[in-house]
Length: 317
View 1 (cartoon, one colour):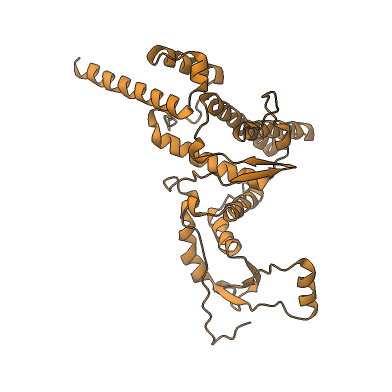
View 2 (cartoon, rainbow, N blue to C red):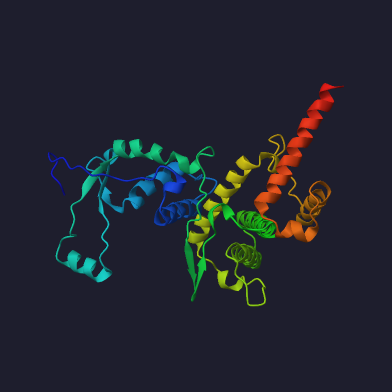
């Protein structure tokens, strides 16, 4: 360990926005969120500060080897080795770890935590770049989603929304069952339903189809939890981006009501198709094959026009 009188300058790196993160850093954030969620209960609420402190260490490949001489002063840490496991064992046998430890002070940690405040800030710039240029699943490599889902049709976008809504719904049911300590059979059914919704979402997103054009969700069954959490970060960012771009298409929930009725997919589909037929002259097949950005822009323009007409009507009363 470095002597008390010796000053060591260590440059630690932290990303300052979602889109500045590497894929590895996004996976470390996902790992931190999942780990914290697993230890959360009514006595131990979820702590973003703990997640951020953990990320200061993990992003910089630091491991804690003990407390500082005064526990309140921080931790004794060292940079994590990249060598194979057998080389690390040899180093331990020889009585050395190949790198010097140093104290990461509590004051330094406290100064760094705010740099990561964008992680849980709803007003921070969202993650809009799909984190995986390619995804290797089994023997097949899938191309990642293009920027802003460019080229995705209204039908594809609608199916993505439906499968994600089902995933969230099933996850909430599973959480309620765990809280009530339901029987194992119910929990197994919950996991099966969650996996089904997730794998179908990924199949649509990554355009996994057989030679006849049928959707192939099977390759995405039991998908890796960390990579899925990273994709959830991205999807949440995309929804925030679309809400900003087409605000009238994504009206916020009424804060006065705790629960908001989720739109029925068939009802939403029928209403959108009818609107496009009436105002734009597109039939059902044309609506489904149009870029979802085009459809949302049409819906935004129609809603804006209606709002302006309503204002004029009230003004002329």
